[in-house]
Every structure is written in structure tokens, then in C-alpha cells.
Length: 179
Image (cartoon, rainbow, N blue to C red; front, top):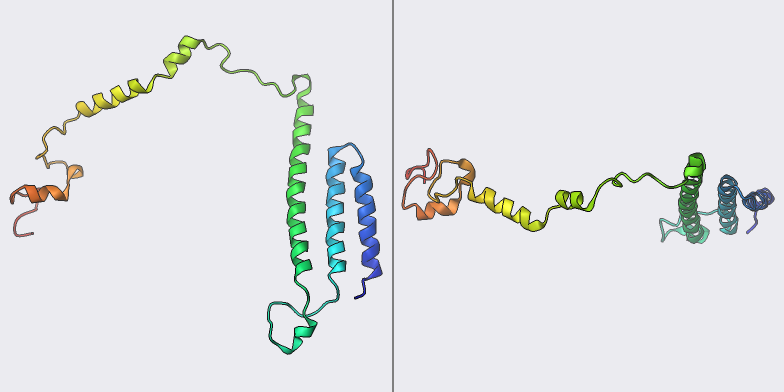
């Protein structure tokens, strides 16, 4: 297991630069430093993974001795995903800080759209559920579905009603011969 000196130097430079940049107070610099430290961590895992070899997908062959350990590869993929998620979070924080800085003295306060409303107007807008129930009952009572034997409307068709019709056609075209 021999690590390339070039990769070790690049990793050390990325760590040093990333930590130095993250020590600044600007969120943008913290973001850039975090990305550099994340890439340095991926290089560290890559260097520590050992020598190259055959893929660990197929086993039971003569090349099992040359097989690579899959755990460092999994750790590297996990580090990439975590790095991406934290980068997205820091980027959202940078955008929010920029947005608040653009608002100036107003800051994060917004005007209240409902400041002019009174309690009585709010009660008018939000009726009780009893009023809604009464409106539903009134609309159901006012409907013309009072006759249970009325089969003129095709939307009202119920096949169970045919058993109680005593042979009367329930739909247009429905005759004893068609049954």
C-alpha cells in the first residue's frame, strides 16, 4: 500500500486552504472553505483505500485475492452526499443573509395585510360549521330526487333497484328480453 506523494500534498493543501478560508467571517468564504475541506476528505478516503484491484461485484473467481475493499468507496460516496447537503444549506444561509442585507433598516419585518380588519369582520368571514351544515341540508332538501322510483336520470342508476322493480325497465332500452 503506497500512497502517491502528489495526492498527499494536494490533500494537505486543500485542508490547509479550506481551514484558512473558513476562519473568515464571511459566509461565502465559509462555503468555499467547506467545499475545499470536503474535497480534501474525499482525497483522504481515496488515499487510505489502498492499492487498486478488481471490482468487488463478482466473487468466486481466481481474482478474489486482487479484490478491492468496497467500504472506502461507500464512505467516499457518503461523504460526497453529506458535502452536497451541507453546501446547499450554507448556500441557502448565504442567500438569506444577502436578502436581509438588501432590505436594510426594514429587516425581516413585513407589513401586516390584515391590520385593518376588526374582530366582527373576521367573524363574518369565518362562519361556524353549523351554518355550513345548514346550507348543505337546505341544498339536499331542495333537490328533486324525492321520488325513489324515478329512473329518468342516468346518474341515479343503481343496479340493486332492478331487483325491486318487478320486471319494469329501469333504463331506456332495458327490457325483459335484454335481461
